[in-house]
Image (tube, rainbow, N blue to C red):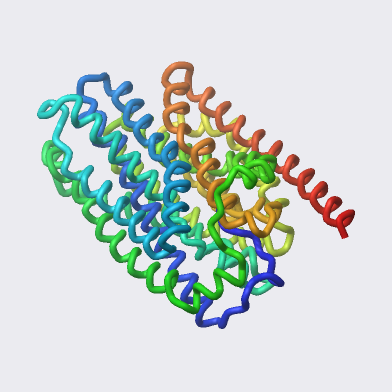
Length: 439
């Protein structure tokens, strides 16, 4: 989670430096999301046949989605481990170690043999490497997004807050386009034997570029001074967890509808179509690419809207809209390719508007000395609860009970978001009252 702004506590930076921070943030987040979507698409198109060939297509996909979820479970662990590294050896060592782990875990997946070759060793290796990816992402938090938000112009803070988020649609578009190219250029056997490995090599290369781009800024003396003045220091202790328990809970569930929707319009429908209409997979990946472009536009638009009406108001309205979408989405998904396109385009429009401002909306509720670590931990928990198990739960429900049950699952996420926003508002009022009584 990125930090909300407290302009009086942060160090002003020049427009040029603010641009440098923005570029570093976009590169870093794009590389992270590209990694994620490469693994997620492979979990649908490759792993059920290549890694879980002993199971039925449905069970193989569910197993692959469980492995996908392991990455989100490992993220909080990575945050604790790499925060300790940060405190002992510094931000540069932490970033290098975490991104090295991410790159090595990603490229190692590309060398995995099939289940027929190595049996359960292949399955165990995939689980281990996916957990390595998750732990590395938990440790890759560099505070650059926080610094960007805290130094953004007062009247354009929501617009600047969208910059870290645009990495998601860009990563999806690039990953989907790469798999479309491979599926159209290779036969099915060629794709399953070696073609699917290339996106993981590309992800490794992008991680190397992202590492140098982020290190150039994050470890410079000038930015060290900015981090220090803004009090962006890692702290993990039981006191932090006790003091911020209520806001950690609220922060973990505020983005629930948004993150569940992300998987409901990307990974879940791709799996459902691959199982029920495999001949439409490439066409659906094209739909995803156009949907990603719509989502990108929605993210940009969310900045202008949130600057006018406020982040929490926008998120509350989006959660209500997502609840309505959850009711009609099963009908759209069952109407064939045209209905599926409409399902994706509407879903991505809502996703862009909500995802653009979902990051950092509760950070202002954290005490200043806790924000750096509490925001990172909240991000890990929200991704685990909101996104980690969404594909496997939605696919299981849809195949077992029908598409309507997946809509109910998304509806529950929207209701959780509305409840969490209410809890956060109550916490903020209570903290403000305590601050006034202390003065």
